[in-house]
Image 1 (cartoon, helix red, strand yellow):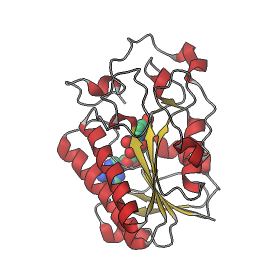
Image 2 (cartoon, helix red, strand yellow):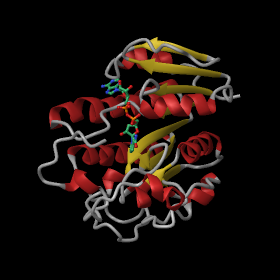
Image 3 (cartoon, helix red, strand yellow):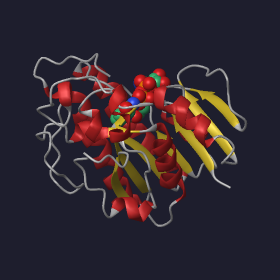
Image 4 (cartoon, helix red, strand yellow):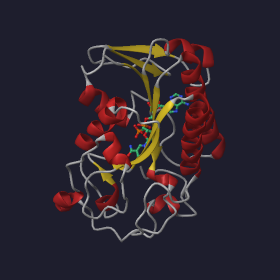
Length: 259
Ligand SMILES: NC(=O)c1ccc[n+]([C@@H]2O[C@H](COP(=O)([O-])OP(=O)(O)OC[C@H]3O[C@@H](n4cnc5c(N)ncnc54)[C@H](O)[C@@H]3O)[C@@H](O)[C@H]2O)c1
């Protein structure tokens, strides 16, 4: 069975994903800044900072797959983003290499391409177009994944997560929504799929109005989403059509706050 180290396990996604994947792994190490209450069976906490390379490397001993979900998940001053999302992500890849981890599953974001106009159909090969410092930090993360794979053979799966919510909440979500059920399935496949090498895929449900082509990466992962935002129109607020794929994140005045 697989041993997992999870960063960001106490966050919004982590709480949902951990519950959904509970019992599927031999051991789950939650690497966190502070203790996490309400552990699921098989989970243990190691308290440490992301920039503490020795503690991080030690925590990865015997780990097969690292799920790197910790970080600032919104726009923030660049210095903060640089510390948590750039230095922190470098430390994860470096510790994984040192500890002999097989694979890192990296929580990237659709804000890496959030500067593209809404409605433009994209795969994963187009040039990045980040909409924020936050999106820019995900460019670093995907680049680090590529470097550590090409140079040191670390497997890496980068998930460009859309909007992970119980239901879609606004018009933009009709295109970018990732349901909890599909998100859990996606992470399960990102851990278990064989021979992934380096792979980038969108973390998005089977939305009728999706802007993203997930072929062939979704097939390589055997990721088969089942939810469609169109089935939840009653929960969607009557907002304006977004101008950019990143919605408010692409606004020059945006400073964070719209999660
Ligand atoms: N939730 C979404 O819809 C969404 C969409 C796209 C991408 N993502 C990505 O998924 C990941 C998880 O998102 P979330 O919504 O659960 O975020 P969250 O803010 O709820 O959780 C992030 C976690 O990271 C931890 N963290 C932040 N900075 C840290 C640091 N410097 N050192 C150690 N821990 C730190 C926080 O304590 C928290 O537990 C993030 O990387 C985010 O960028 C999320």
